[in-house]
Length: 453
Picture 1 (tube, rainbow, N blue to C red):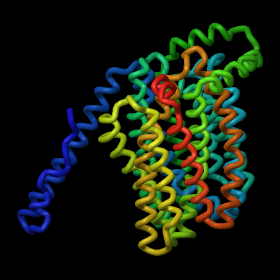
Picture 2: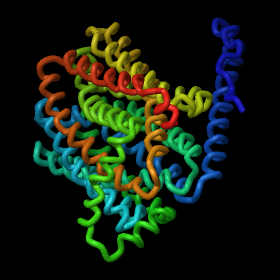
Picture 3: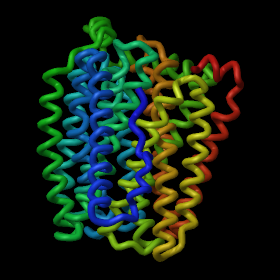
Picture 4: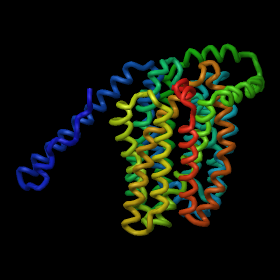
């Protein structure tokens, strides 16, 4: 079934007044209602076909996404208001990545020993509930440092989350799961303007403290409720049985084999490089885009929140209206094109001048980045998991996350130094980095690309 179209001769009433305007308003409202009903029906159809744990993850995810979007929209400006320099903000990013790397390395063995369900609950609590509480009461650099270290335990949580998400379902179902999860995750950008309103009313510091406190309460509640309905996967139960009575350090013996799996496979090797590039992009763009918009483009802080919304809307349109029509065939080529568009969007942002025109140009660049990300994320995630064997998935993910994060760790400091020298240099360097990812996927030999799909 095709989604209802927004273009249905509405132009006939756009210049009318009186009753014509009312008809147009009612018509527009009806179309929005039909679209909302369509998306609701498609989501329910998808959820009904999934196992219980997948339903629990998808239904609970909005609680995390909304509170994350509200609380982190002004994170870097909050740090700056409390006296942190651009270099210190970048250092926190690097420390967080090191902590993430450490816990990523333990994530696979812990998921196999504790089970995916228990490990996810423990490390989601330390990574988000504890970190949100620290951020809410932060006074200086050292508070933020403690929060960054705690938040790094998400490295262990992500391994278990991914295993719970993709195990016990068919490979062809994974693109659908990743697509709908991305649609839900887009809410964090859509709610960012709410944070902007609060910042306009109460200032960056007071609003941020309140939102971090709110996130602590909501996320903790969500973790408890979700854990109640999660079920351990078949692979998880088997791995727990195999790991029983053995030392956790014995699991590290399989690290060379996990690394070899990636090195020998041309598809996994390139996908791994793209994961490094994406990790750097997410880490530094989320931190420095608000600073770029205020310092280079000249926006007031309260207006910065509109840009995550633009990005989320662009991702939403691509994910819901375009992605289902693309299918999974040609995934590697689509991934390369998506990365190329991300690089182009960052270039558009980098060249944005100050003033109103610059604000519009930056918005166009952000929209390009968001639309392309709507293609990059599902195809990369699905291709990666479809290329991994179930029995080795947790270990390979754990080791690659560790290596990826170690390689990405210096990016926070480097980005801070580049941004301190020139915000434009920072954005140009990030665009060039994403371009290398596009070239890496575009140069994948055709037989290997087909095998990876």
